[in-house]
Length: 230
Image (tube, rainbow, N blue to C red; front, side, top):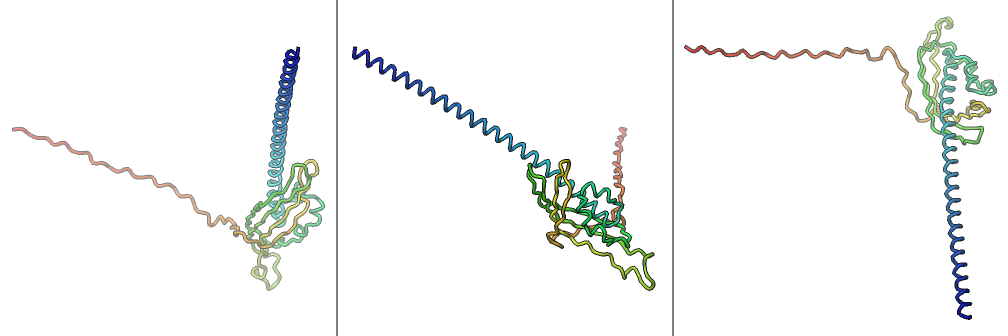
């Protein structure tokens, strides 16, 4: 009887041990599945956030370059309307931008100008309604003073064209729910170290030249020798 009891106890212990190992194995499997699912969810979230961030950065890049270029054209009186600026700038900003009402170049005939906006940094998060774009604006202008506005005894040389210095700006954007608008323009540095922007001059543009056609060389045809046999 004792042997049968000990055998039964050992059998029960073995069954309990196997059951415990099965539970531990099932628990490890569940933990593995949960970890894999969590990693997959985190990976998907990172991809989604990266996509929205990249999309926002692309929109901000385009709006900054187009909006600031249009602002420069308006200041230079180059067929830019205030209604066009309202598509890129907040009305409150336009009302306080002194450069738009200074009429710095209104007495000059602008013959040509070059514009460049170098984007240095874009700071934006997928869930925020504000963003900041750091840029360097470079403008080169060519023109002369309007002769019809000269006073008696004055010459065009008495009114040199005002220079447009290079400036580093921190552009502040606000998302109104439908799109981004420029809400502020903070001057960070004036005349930063940048390469000067050359204004294209059509008079100095190289003229197209025709590609010379090679003349074919004439190869002499050998004359056959005729031998006369007496």
